[in-house]
Amino acid sequence: MDPRDYEREEERKEEYENRQQRYDQYQPSPSSQPLKRRLFPVIASSIAGAVLGGGIVLYGAPQLGLMDSADTQTANQTNQTTHTQTATTTSTTPRTVSTTVNQSDLVSVVNKVSAAVVGVNNIQQQTNPFSGDTQTQEAGTGSGVIFKKENGKAYVVTNNHVIDGASEVEVSLSNGQKEKAKIVGADALTDLAVLEMSDKNVEQVAKFGKSSDLVAGETVLAIGNPLGEQFSRTVTQGIVSAAKRSVPISENWNVDAIQTDAAINPGNSGGALINSSGEVVGINSMKISEDNVEGIGFALPSDEVQPTIEQLMKNGKITRPYMGVGLQDVGQLSAATKQDQLGLTSDTSEGVVVTTVEPFSSASDAGLQSKDVIVAIDGNEVKTSSDLRQYLYTKRKVGDTVKLDVYRNGKKQTISLKLSAQQDNNG
Image 1: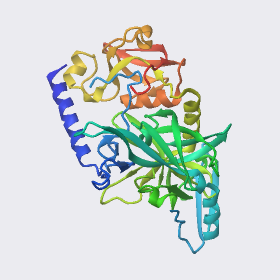
Image 2: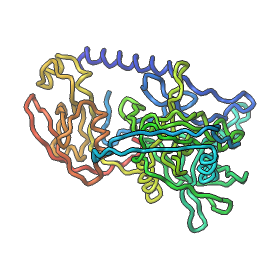
Image 3: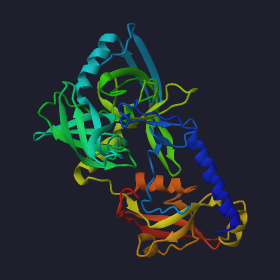
């Protein structure tokens, strides 16, 4: 590597670490329960990443074939409020959404889903550093939503970070009963997990709505367990601030989310965001937490949650397309490297350079070589490795063939590549 490239990489890492240090992090409970925490990620206003209380980076973009080298409270609204919003749908046909909400309506809406919102307790084995004894202890709490019941079993969707590292999972129901649950499947990249438990004490199952029908200004309610069971199934009211917001939660991955100003707090992770019909349109997942920021929370949209949990129930994991290459953004390279080693002009700032090709991988079979510069995939411009990931993981599946526009020694060519299955779901 060119010394100047190394220096740039070190500067980039130092800048990223400095940003991480500015994150507000949710602190654990008092020393009487030193391990217990309310599981909830926060995002610095710089939107550099989503962070779990205690300083763990919530989303680590797995390689996935791109091997980087470098008690219930209802909303208090006594007066009737009407929100009217005109939006343009994907068919470019304007539609008018009128939502009238009053106190009795809110109570009815909450009653449709509240009992389906549960507490999720992450129980882990802990070793006493003095005696060496091992015991199980609640390490954190979050929320979840019962979305299915059949054959004596009930299924709960929650966030992956809520159950991450658990040796046992316990679900707290609205009637005060607790049920042991097993993890059916989990996925770090989408931050979703599915739990299975007995349906013996289940009183209600939530219904999913279409998040794609949401428009900015619509009334939504967030239901969950902020700060644990003491405030279980708390209801807060807000609006859809943005129906679709691309949120960078790591250096290499963006997540599409619903932005809302409904109050979302630690412990709400995995809870429900519902529309005025009482349908779940999102799974509450993260928020921006800084002293000068209020009312910016995010929920994973139901249209993306549903296919993910279906695959988790079927396979226990999410299988994503795999290329088998290491990548570095061209914008991180020195002018000399661009010219001398890649045959690019010194002012080229977009594209990704292939740093390594895994033997016997899809990339190797297709003829990709080290120092190839990928600038487009299926006609879609590739500016960074994040662009490439976003396209592969959201637009393509295993077995698809993609066309890559690459520069090799300064000359452009097109390479066809058949995507294979990623072997390790978490990178």
